[in-house]
Amino acid sequence: MLIGRITRLVHLSQQTHVPGTRLVAGRNDKGYGILEAEDGQEVYFSHEIVAGLHGFDDLRTGQQLAYTLDDPFLRAATAEQVMPAPVIVLRPAA
Image 1 (spheres, helix red, strand yellow):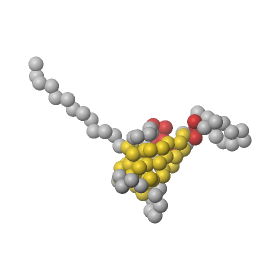
Image 2 (image 1 turned 45 degrees about the vertical axis):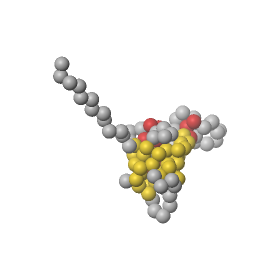
Image 3 (image 1 turned 180 degrees about the vertical axis):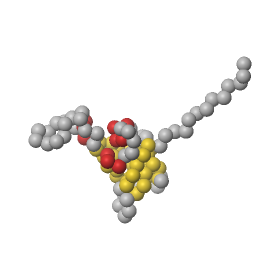
Image 4 (image 1 turned 120 degrees about the vertical axis):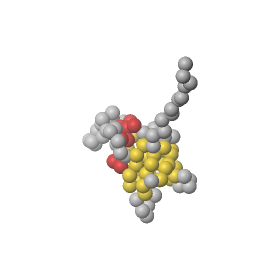
């Protein structure tokens, strides 16, 4: 899997309510984002491909995602959060 950093997130639930549409503010965890790949290219991803319990709602700008590409486009086919390695602190015995 490739690793990219989120440069832009658009949560549709944060947009204003438009009468006559299915978009209700605060009720949808839908949207899209742009990743900056390691080679500098921008990769698009949609809310539905993000793995996890809360998926797209848990993402923040600057966070890293592991993803696979949907060839031949610069569009992610799958994406999941990259969790930092746990820090183990060793203390001398007292």
